[in-house]
Image 1 (cartoon, rainbow, N blue to C red):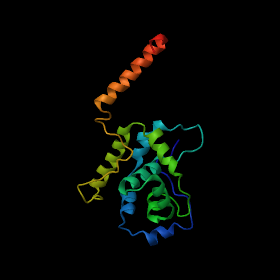
Image 2 (cartoon, rainbow, N blue to C red):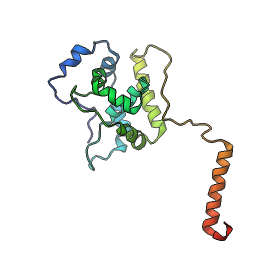
Image 3 (spheres, rainbow, N blue to C red):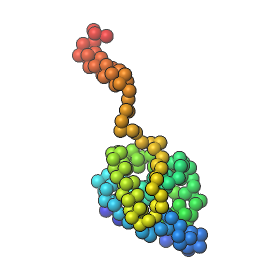
Image 4 (cartoon, rainbow, N blue to C red):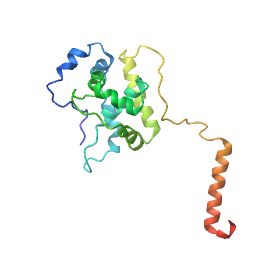
Length: 181
């Protein structure tokens, strides 16, 4: 059974967070005010409770993606920054000396756990709604990095669709009668 929230490992250095990160810092405010348990609830079915090694907690992975949407960074740059930026580590519920994830884990999380694009939209929507209710977001405009998202419209041009259908039709015909090649 996966815990509702990732817990920070005990560390003699956690007091650094109180020194370095101001009480009014956006990440501190989000951590204190937002209950991210909805992420665990939405993704419970995507994790096997008794097979393989323990996965990185879905809330932590979602928080990485949230950081990525808040800052225009690549996966590699985001993980690199989370190595030394204490505000990132605090937001991710990590001890200051704790090792960060491998950048490929973010890609796997997006592809394996968030297979349904609507699920990622739903999670981000819920987070933004909660943040707006708590006055954590002061603007009415939100910019999201859509590098890894697909448009719901016009994925292919009509000519490309016809070419794909033609290719599939020819393959089917050839599988039935090879002399048609």
